Amino acid sequence: MVGEVAVVGLTLAAALLAASGQLTFKRYVKPFQRSLRGVASVLMEKHMLGGAFLYVASLGLYLLALRSAAVSFVYPVFASSFVFVAAISVLVLGERVQLRRLAGIALVVAGVVVIALTY
Image (cartoon, rainbow, N blue to C red; front, side, top):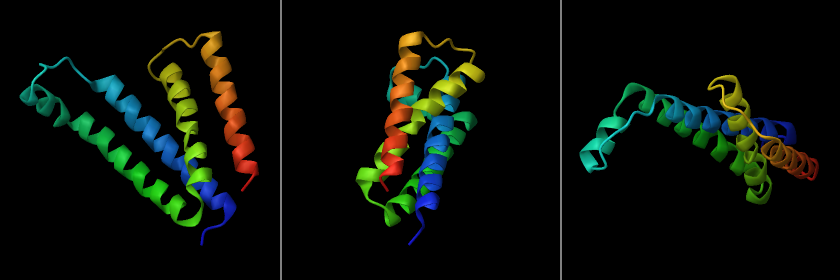
């Protein structure tokens, strides 16, 4: 079994990797034809494969966390990926975040903290 801090760390790392994969997709996706061939050509680009690798790595860490803690704990902590996506999109993509969205992100952070303290 893995300790409490390690479970939270694994879950947060998984969330960060998933967020990084998502932002990789956003940054490098190019217009494509709405056909199986068009989708396949985008999915086979090196950056898309890199984003997929980040998702697979995220899944591996997430599964390690699930081995040692209840899904009712791990999954809500994984919701911190929403926070990571917002932060990375501002820092890397230059997106703007409105006050209402920041309030929602603050609620997610508060929820993750409350759940993490219950473990």
